[in-house]
Length: 78
Image 1 (cartoon, rainbow, N blue to C red):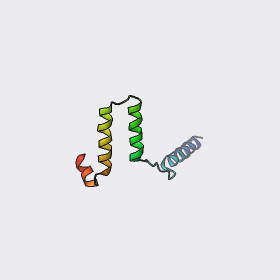
Image 2 (image 1 turned 60 degrees about the horizontal axis):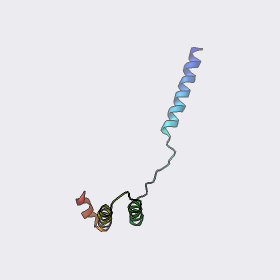
Image 3 (image 1 turned 180 degrees about the vertical axis):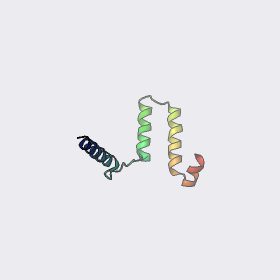
Image 4 (image 1 turned 135 degrees about the vertical axis):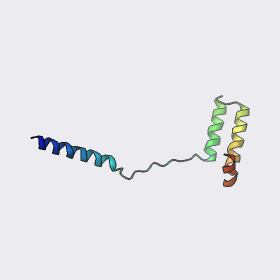
């Protein structure tokens, strides 16, 4: 009887571990918003009073400069 319990426990553990190791091949894709979407979101924050006009202007300039600068310039800014 004891061997049957050990065998059943081993089988259950093996199946559980096999399920944990199999990922299923799913991937998570992260989409970066476009410059246009970020500008719309920024305008919305201004319209709702979440940010000031000065903050809006500063953030808008950073967004535009950050998206139009060559990749080497962007790395230096970080």
